[in-house]
Each structure stands twice: as structure tokens, then as C-alpha cells.
Length: 169
Image (tube, rainbow, N blue to C red):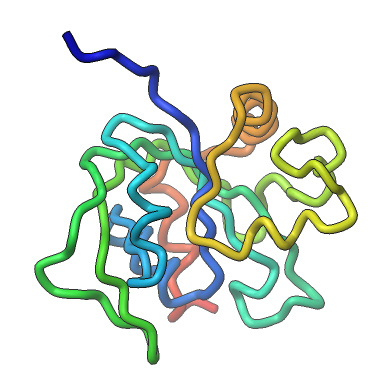
């Protein structure tokens, strides 16, 4: 009999405006070819928190890295029939999401303010190095803290998604 595992929570890390718009519009996530093994840790039913880096919107001196949304994976990660391309980067693996809620544009949980309270960042001085990937599994206490901080900021997906459109910025 197979062993049942509880859904995990992951931080999905998005570092550029065009891929973020694609993720939000399509409710899908794509992973670059070199990150395929890392993405296989994600499973259908897992919860994901959407994180935009401070460089995501092209102005890292103004913008902060924020957890902006909550979603559930509605499929396992698999090889895409047709890779998604953003600039020079090809994304060959992907999965489907159901986004439950989003914070309005330029709102969300500022991650750096919580780094010292999060187990996933054992060395607060070098925490941002752990975000140089497409996803980061979160220990349960970290997931609970981030979800608790994010919940009051979330709005229904349809009411705020258009605020993230690159054409509106």
C-alpha cells in the first residue's frame, strides 16, 4: 500500500514581469530546463505561495521582494509539449495552478522583514541566496507564518489580477 504524504508548501519564485504575467494569466507555472530536477519536488495538491523578487518589476531600488499570492497545484510537474520562452530562456517543465487569492499590485508580505523568523533561512545574512531558484520548499512553521501574514492582504483573484498586467505599468 502506498504511503500517503500531506501536501507540502513551496515558495514559487518569479523574478521578471513577463513570466509573472504569464503565470497569473494562465494559472500555470513553468520551470527552466536546468531546474527540472528541483521542480519535481512539487506535487499535485501542494500549496504554493507566489513570491516576486525585488527585481521582478525592473526597479529593485523601489520594489521589495513580496509574497503576493496563494495557489494550489492542480497537476504534477511534467514536460511541456511546447516549451515556453521568455527572452532567451526556455522553460521546458510546467504545471497548472489554481490561484486562490492575490495581494493588490505592490502589496504583499515583504519577505526580508520575516527572514529572522523563518527556518528556511538558517543564515539571515545570506538569505537571498536561497531564492536563486524557481521554487523553495518551506518547513511547516514557515508556511504557517507566511500564510498567516498573507491572508489579510489577499483579494479575490479576478478582482486584482489585471493590476499585474505589464500593459498597465
